[in-house]
Image (cartoon, rainbow, N blue to C red; front, side):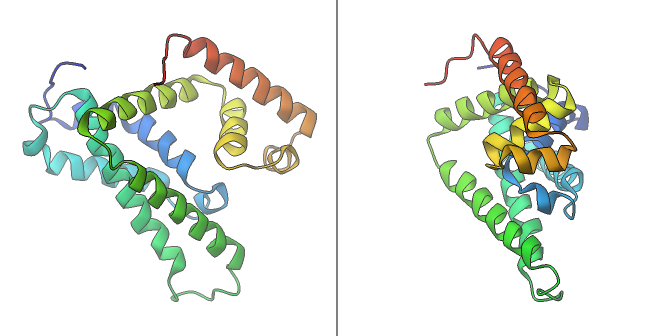
Length: 191
């Protein structure tokens, strides 16, 4: 575990912005991401964390990240609920609404799975941060291909269409991305 830090400044939470954004991209269907402002959801999460800073003044990095993950999951769930409302013509946005429902289910499962002991939650948060940091170090195309295939179960053809590449090129991106992740995470032991 890392040492407590000063949770009274926005800068102390700011270092988690990229990791939270990556975690949000992993949990939300890419078709919904075009309509949903993930950066806004992450910003809202960081603002809420800053406003609740008195509760976390003596928390270590792992505890802060566990709090941020829970807050992000709640904020994503709220944002995704918008797509399930009757305020729009659902017939025009049926595929998007279906994707929002799937994303909302994924976020709810993520939140439900987070109901573990505090030490397990901190360990998982630290692993998530390591993974998000490693993903963020990859070139954009490799990161996008990995996220779409491994977290959203897209086919090579679907990924190729989105990235404007052939399925063979996508397979190469995924292979190189996985190899780079293995190198970056070689000392990571997941219990």
